[in-house]
Amino acid sequence: MAILHQAVVLLGAALCVSAATKPHVIMIMADDMGWDDTSTHGSKSVLTPNLDVLTRSGVSLHRYYTHALCSPARTAVLTGKYAHTVGMQGMPLSNAEERGIPLEERLISQYLQDAGYRTQMVGKWHVGHAFFEQLPTYRGFENHFGVRGGFIDYYEYNAQEQLDGRPVTGLCLFDDLQPDWTTEGYITDVYTEKSTTIIENHNVSEPLYLLLTHHAPHNGNEDASLQAPPEEVRAQRHVELHPRRIFAAMVKKLDDSIGEIVATLEKKGMLENTIITFSTDNGAPTVGLGANSGSNYPLRGVKKSPWEGGIRGNAMIWAGPEVAPGNAWRGKVYDGNMHAADWVPTLLEAIGEKIPAGLDGIPMWSHIIENKPSPRTEIFEIDDYFNHSSVTLGRHKLVKGTIDESLSKHYGEDLRGIIGTPPDYKQKLRDSKAWESLETIGIPLDADVMADRDEAIVTCGNVVPKPCSPSAESWCLYDIIEDPCELRDLSEELPQLAQILLYRLEQEEAKIIPREGQYVADPKSAPKYFNYTWDAYLSVEPYSDSE
Ligand SMILES: *[C@@H]1O[C@H](CO)[C@@H](O)[C@H](O)[C@H]1NC(C)=O
Ligand SMILES: *[C@@H]1O[C@H](CO)[C@@H](O)[C@H](O)[C@H]1NC(C)=O
Ligand SMILES: *[C@@H]1O[C@H](CO)[C@@H](O)[C@H](O)[C@H]1NC(C)=O
Image 1 (tube, rainbow, N blue to C red):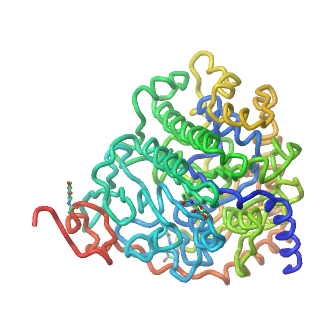
Image 2: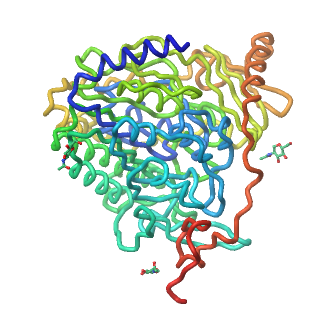
């Protein structure tokens, strides 16, 4: 294994180090965006032309897996480890608790800082915020502008939670360690502007790492759950259902952000030597926690479930010609598995750095760029808080434990409704900022080829359904290649195979680091003690304007 890693690292170095500086790395994340919430996967209601131009001139990660919930998924992205091996599985963090990624874990920001990168973060953190040492600026980021917790109002930047049995609210937007009372605007635009300013001010002789984690299209506070500028909602009048129309506008703003980032990199002369990644944190909650009218159709299940709808996510990699020369690798739909935990080693491989020992993640860069079979033959989703788990080994997936029936259905078909003729997709591609920027640096683009997404669209196939709901004592088994929609249970047909998968799951479950107990909201965190902000309540002395 060590020799294999070394060979991969050398190959990565050979691919990349010709450029003057190491490649810039821009990681963009969406929040609660489902499989069917992008035109990359064929959606006609939710259009993402900038993302599609990047994806179709980079590599679409067709079997990208992640954890089913936010804090666990972000833990995997940042640490290169499964959430269950660092105690971050289960219910995402509230603003009123002190859990977080253990301080002894190293994060991608720290690895890249050690490799000489300038490290910047804009957006949502959600992996620990009760005391300073848990915050981005103590964990490898030079600056963090954004929100430390899970969700906010898109205009007011406050979050409402239950504390002592009643709702309380506090501001969540921080500029490094200071609450930000002056910023105004729609949060997606605010993050875009902060990010483009970072790029514009960047010293190009140093490599930049920018992590931009949007809230979109997560819902806001419960009573204002879907928020988008009214003119953007009006521009989505081809979308039939009302909440889906707002949702489409939220994703449109996210897609515009991607276009702005690409255009700014191009104007700054950085794009040729940049890696851009895009991924969602988990599947869409069509129903359940944070329900947002997102859709994983035709996949089964939603966020917070180990069904494909919860864990199979949108993702892509794009790289400039100085990073990955030639065009032969561009426009592929990569059919091999990748997991959120693979970003750390994959990006380290891409920039020619050593892969640290002890990660769950696997370096995927050369496999993806050279379109070789994936070394990731196993995927685990283990949650001993919600008491369910899944293992995918080769083409088979086993799901076991208790999963709410309401999280286990195939949702989203009704969200596809279109009024009249949908917008001209090819024209949208050509009109996008990403198109213009890539054209400027000489990347070949063909809207006819890009608009043909057959390879990227999941269809359920012709399996004869055999329904199955797992329980604490029983499991379901699927051929996930032939049956990506988890319709036909094979556990009775293939009992021995099920035993093998159960055995692998048991072995992996032995590595679980337990969570720090059940969730209890800490009354010390109450925003009223901190001038109505959700501050780092174990580090900051209580303060208030009225005192
Ligand atoms: C830009 O970075 C290079 C390399 O670190 C450094 O030598 C130079 O002084 C920097 N320029 C500015 C304006 O900071
Ligand atoms: C998971 O199982 C444990 C042990 O049986 C139980 O205490 C806990 O309440 C369960 N969790 C959920 C979310 O049902
Ligand atoms: C307290 O909050 C108000 C807004 O409600 C703000 O204007 C003021 O600057 C804050 N005070 C401190 C000390 O942060």
